[in-house]
Image (cartoon, rainbow, N blue to C red; front, side, top):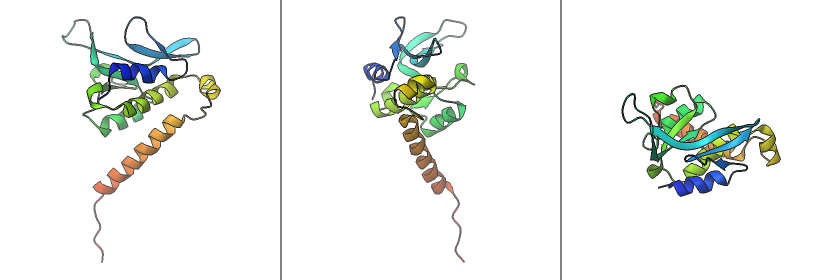
Length: 156
């Protein structure tokens, strides 16, 4: 089970990440603008009413919609989305269901997808070690899942 303290510790461990003074959100500078990497989910409790922060859920930026689909398919207990995020590269994460290690990978990917190439290069990141590890792990998991679901062929 991860906590907001874990989120804060992990997010702020990445270069130049800043926490918003207004609400629980973390961003990294890119081309003069702050780009969000993780933030508290603003849940719509009632139609046509203002959204309210849900401290049990974290929204995390992902690299693209394909990565979002992979994450959502990996574990619906941990990750979900809502119509507000349709077409937007972010997943919603139930903090009670993820580990600190899960968060480190997710936030690392988010940092890599939003940090400027100059910042990544300055930090010795050419293609993100974090992103490479996550991609390799997902590819391995996808291959083992495909292997199990593939129909068996009878030998002659």
